[in-house]
Length: 345
Length: 88
Ligand code: SF4
Image 1 (cartoon, rainbow over the protein chains, first blue to last red):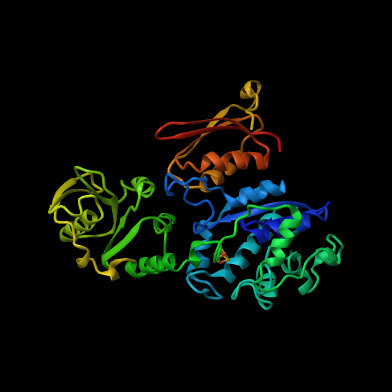
Image 2 (image 1 turned 30 degrees about the vertical axis):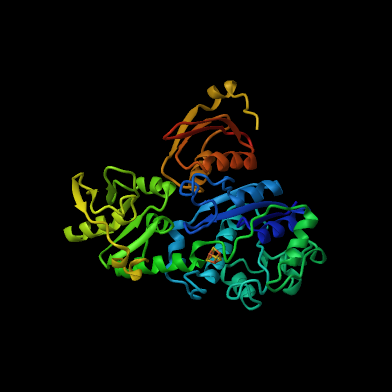
């Protein structure tokens, strides 16, 4: 029996691609990459407490539906180079989709074909589905630059592409593959129905935060403030949480917007100067950067503005320094008119 | 899912602990997967976590890979999930 390693994002297309190959009697296992930017199941801890339906990990859910193993691989460290130096540039925001796909197929090839006994690689790509990374010209480019060459099978659009080795050698029947193209989702939905799939995830836009304009602007701000295009995993996790307010280039506040976010930010409080309102519950604010004493007072006024004491003349705020010193401040909450929109990252 | 009987296996594989407190999903699952790769069949692994997502994700990962979910417990500060490494 031939073995295929399928890239599983948690979305419908990769699920269908794996299923189509599985239906042909191929043994399929799934591979899912954790880049740090994944939308998938990223923030159970940060989500609102009252959310009715618990957030599932869609890639695991897909694997369960298909009855396949799913290997989730942490590539966050090596993925940095893709985000920071994409050879083929960015999409609409900071999403380096083409380089990302090449990287993932390459990793699937190394992990599955070179280091284990998988025969070929399967992805859910469809020609014309995404303006930059899924075009007719990019399909052979991804195959070539990833080193997968003709071991890369795209079952959903294979009939619009030159036959790959799995097709030529009869590992799969090309006639039972598909020729989908373009942005119309109806063929995929019909195929899903024919397999009896429902309740599948339909991520809008893309599979990661880098396609999100707001997230991308926070990342660009981070690079700008630090004077270097670099990040640590904690940086990119924190960009997903809270209100980010930058009164000056040398520091910014990260203010929790609700209980779940405050709880998440609590986990970082020993590593950051942080502020909290005293006397009544309010958000937690981490200060990233190197603020001076006057900056801390301004930050306290901003925090007070987002607390329940925003209408009071003065509010007590405690500033907890990383060296353990706690400073008590009594400040006037900053009136909204004095908080320029440009400070909101 | 019904918990597996594990009594006989404790002696066979021993018991280990994995601390993934503070990590957000899917990292607890990834760390579990990495640890399980080095464990022999029958080992019990106690996973300590804080992200409530593990309550869905680790059982799902166990089902997908054929490992056993032995117990889950939760208090105000921590979630403890015990799994049994099975032959897959
Ligand atoms: S949306 Fe993100 S994960 Fe998906 S291909 Fe683009 S960069 Fe990669």
